[in-house]
Length: 319
Ligand SMILES: NC(=O)c1ccc[n+]([C@@H]2O[C@H](COP(=O)([O-])OP(=O)(O)OC[C@H]3O[C@@H](n4cnc5c(N)ncnc54)[C@H](OP(=O)(O)O)[C@@H]3O)[C@@H](O)[C@H]2O)c1
Image 1 (cartoon, rainbow, N blue to C red):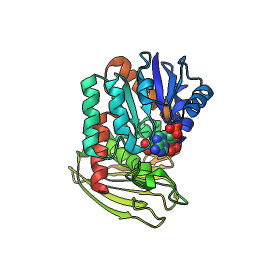
Image 2 (cartoon, rainbow, N blue to C red):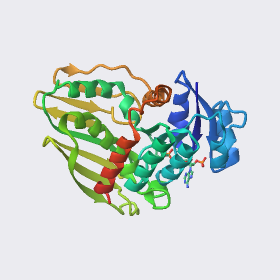
Image 3 (cartoon, helix red, strand yellow):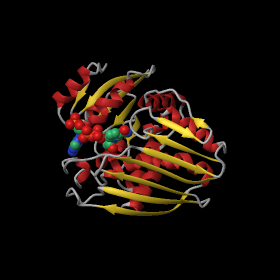
Image 4 (cartoon, helix red, strand yellow):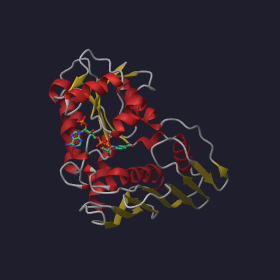
């Protein structure tokens, strides 16, 4: 049994990560860290955290628990590096939310700290455990669609104002790109890099200050891969449009309707018909992979190095 500590008690901890821990056989929610002790205790109690002292408001005390095996970091992006390095130094494995941090230097320091401590570092791109996406990636990588020449992804949402922490510098660096664009970037890299090689060129149009934020409110991004294939993605907080992905190859195509997003559903059509898949909770798959990586002493499926590459590209897309 792997004992997991949750850092942060916000949206993703409450709605997705903590419920998903309950779906994983070899994992238990052990303890919780919040800025506020009462909030930590309430969150721990509401979610059945198992530690005798389960609610904490001090990082070092939380990490000093010898029975704690690993942490899940679900706090604003600029806090991830310090929390990851502290956890690794305390000998705890780390699953950190996306984007893993906001600079390449910090990403390098996180990878180095986990390597030096001999702990696993995973980055939480949950769409990798959408079973339709997994089936699609397998077909792409087996050459079912021929040479892949173009792919696209769109995930947007509508914000009403700039109260979101991603809209300002204190604990955020990017807004739409950190909220959803980084997921589309990971999805495109997962689908294409094994068959098209690395991303060699990036260009982008960034829209700011329509809601009042100096951060990206819309990002329209073009990527070129080593093979000559191209890809585009759009992230935005200015409008909510249907989420969509496309894969276009020399022997076929795939259209993904509403599969890009939080959950394991949606629809995938290909040139040979519907791609059937079971709807499962992708967050449970993500945590099961992290737990299995700890047990087997292997890197999680989305490693710190992969998360670092995503951050490096985000820095080029929106310096
Ligand atoms: N994979 C996904 O599907 C997905 C979806 C959404 C978010 N995320 C990622 O998860 C992380 C958290 O996002 P979220 O949407 O859950 O954010 P959120 O709702 O604002 O929650 C963040 C939590 O972090 C803690 N925190 C510590 N210092 C903070 C500070 N200075 N300002 C604000 N919160 C602070 C807070 O918990 P306490 O008040 O208890 O300290 C807060 O509830 C981000 O990295 C985000 O990109 C991932």
